[in-house]
Amino acid sequence: QLQLVESGGGLVQTGGSLRLSCVASGRTFVNYVVGWFRQAPGQEREFVAAFWWKDEMMRYAESIKGRFTISGDPSKNTAYLQMNSLKPEDTAVYYCAARIWPTVEITAKEYDYWGQGTQVTVSS
Image (cartoon, rainbow, N blue to C red; front, top):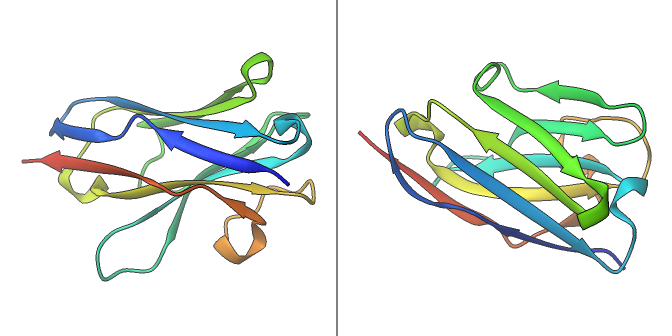
């Protein structure tokens, strides 16, 4: 069983940066597609970014393209989401997810494992 733990969230001003981390345990992370999703209060969970370690295929949501970067460190079994130029509308709980089948998907239901989430709040 794969376990995921996110960290790195917090309160930041508009225009600031944060780097979220997702540490995997129980299995080797490089065998899974990694996704980041977010959920704001009263809204559905939405796709942010995803990638597949083995061919570095990446996908980004249009709303964050050019500001966020997804990456990973296989030696640490850890994935990252670097978030720059943050806006108040980026405020949400951010979740790391992993998918067994090696296609990079943007729908939450396609992912098999989830972390508990980390809160990101961007003040105006």
